[in-house]
Image (cartoon, rainbow, N blue to C red; front, side, top):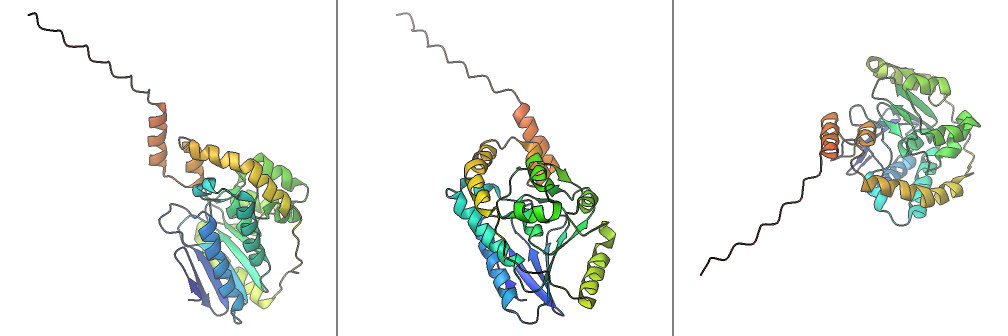
Amino acid sequence: MLFESAHLRVTCEYGTATLWLAFTGEPVNALDAPRLAELDSALGAVERNLFVHTLVVRSAKPFGFCAGLHPDVARVTDRATFAGRGQRVLARLGALPFATVALIDGPCLGAGLELALACDHRLCVSAPHTLLGFPGRFACFGGSNRLRKLLGKRAGAFIESGRTVSGREARDLGLVDRAFCTRRAKIELRTFLDERERHPHTPDRVPDETGFAHERRAFARVAAESLSARARAPQDADTLLARGFITPLEAEQMRARAAAPAPAPAAEPEPALRRAA
């Protein structure tokens, strides 16, 4: 065990380190300030280990990678500073001196997709529960820059559309290197790592923060209103269900409560009649 905290752990075997996203107490993995600090510490532990030649980022939760920002982020006051912190952490991931691989199985949305984009390679389990995209229509951790390197001029339109795509659609778009079915996930990951071991190649690490300042300003200005509105409107069951924060049963209960008519105000009791003398 190279690192362990409340929400993350890093294991290592034969030079391949695995960073497990295990946000306990939550239905899905989602990022906030404390979890970003843990991620930074985990990356530091991996960075200092001289025997690591590959890092795999994956979820310890079944059918989930990272659903984006935690709803608690809506209460962050200095959003530009928060975005800058996330940009620095993911830049550290992108600057590691060895190959990094994201294994995506489940929702990979918003900041979660930015985490995957910070890796050199992305492998995707193509299943109904796997969706990739920016449903909030913004990137805040350097994702717009990294996405532009993959999609070119289409990157901005993809983010602004709020569109989510399946694993195979993501492969066809160029978001991920490979997409495969659930039962082949372990085999495909091992095959990919073996190929990288036989032909080791670390992409050029050229620092590029183009667009980072714009993301910070946009997140402070626009995303604050969006996140605050979402925090004030927990009745948006479809959004919470799509991101994995609630179960289908909880979604049905929320819809039922939202559709139920408001209770009529109780009638005021009539004043008691005085007894005749």
